[in-house]
Length: 279
Image (cartoon, rainbow, N blue to C red; front, side):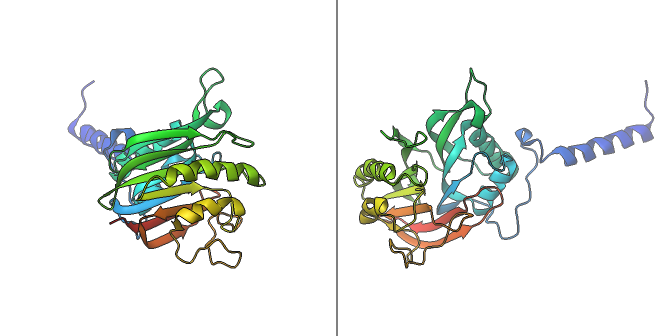
């Protein structure tokens, strides 16, 4: 069938309109960049570190998760309760929708087909992940000898933060009401953490600042919030929907500059990010 010139022009206009409509929903093409919220930074902040328990399952829309990360664009992001499948999609969205390119390393402790959307004979890996704008080296992955009610562990990498080489630890400790288990886990983490003069330990510690099981980490580092101390009368900003501080960025040999806790509709944990001076 031969189309007239008017028909061809109309068809071409419709094709362009369709491409504009579907661009953001098809990030694999990388043709369209999504608009960020007002106040978003727009490019990676080289001395910014973020921790976020993305809550699995909560809002499993990975475009939303990527948008939350892109708004603050940290150099390093530690995620907990992360499925490999979801992290890979978040990375794709960050690159294709926002132009932010991150390397990834994993510290997985579970193969959970029910939680991570795999199949019984091909489960999905679940645990922690670190995204970094700079390459990462010397990854270690340690599963705690006692995970409590669910296997738990920590991972660590060496990467660049603020132009300096920094050892970054990411962990998720045992669930609430398992104080003795967390104490043992902190012992394992603190032993490794203490070996580095310049290090960051971040993640979901599942304990308030004054919890006795956190004492060893407090002996080695300070929270990124200078006002937050291991005291029941401290002024630690809550990081969860139930108004408890469970999420931390502990700094060793690194000075905090500014931190922010940002509630998000996509998880029951708030996003916590901090700018630091590792010099």
